[in-house]
Amino acid sequence: MYKFAHISDIHLGPLPQLTLRELFSKRITGFVNWHRNRRKHLFVNTLDLILSDLKARQPDQLMITGDLVNLATKIETRLAGEWLRTIGDPQDTTVVPGNHDAYVPGAHDKSVNEWYPFIKSDDDPAEWPEDDHIFPTIRRRGPIAIIGCSTSNATLPFSASGYFGSRQARETVNLLKQAGEEGLFRVVMIHHPPIHGAAASHKRMLGIRRFGAAISTGGAELVLHGHTHLNTLYWLKGREKQVPVVGIASASQGPGGHKPRAAYNLFTLTGEPGNWSLLRERYGLTETGDGVALDDSRVFYGAMPDQKLSVPEMARLL
Image (tube, rainbow, N blue to C red; front, side):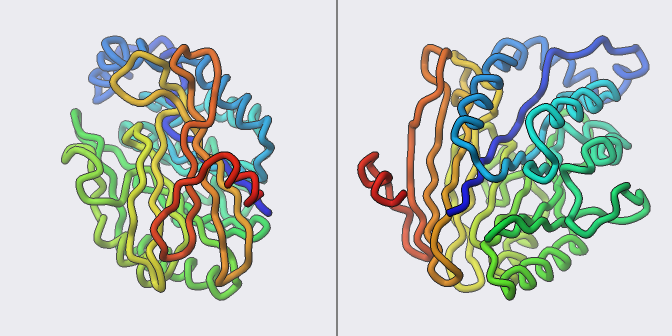
């Protein structure tokens, strides 16, 4: 049995003091949006509750699908790196960046460099050679292979789109095939939902068909994403079976907003290659905002439709 957890869209706050030079860019729109909207519903204590409950369930691996920061300023990126080091060892925590982590030109590389120990492939050097492409990455942990993809790139004001290019697609296929030959359960991490219509046009992922082709050619067992701040389940065509594509609410979303309250997914993997069983439990912030409770559970059996489980049924599986 192997357990792994998934959170996303941390948006660590509050915002630091910004210089006029920092604001003289796309950051001004994000600055206004934070003070008008996000700061009213994204709370550090909510994130603390989510992480405390998550850690109590002792997952073997924590996966974070981007948007650790808000405007990708130098101090935000550094503080996010310090936060990562407080929640776990790089061996046990895997990160891919989101659009907010690449908010302005140059921010993506600074974020990757700061968080590199939590991002890099197992066989990558200790320091990131910045002239090399880092994504896709692969980390082998127990029975699973974690393939990290990046859609993170700087965009124009009022745009939050992502991009998945042909080079990354080719290399993702190669990693998926390799991990499949090794008999590993393949989990693909990406920030933007790789599904048509899952995000508004100005927030969509460019390269959705390319990503879908990579999954159907290389094969995978699970795709995890963030970005929409929603708890969602979609399906993609895989090499031999349908692949669940699972999204999660922002880990910092407090009660009272128009988006779902903060949540995390806990996955329990059992079985063996060709006969995997994956239990997904979603734990979310309670309506009063002072606790975390189980609010949904499903089990995935290969190409069969997902099946909802009662608590006694979950107990029997575990």
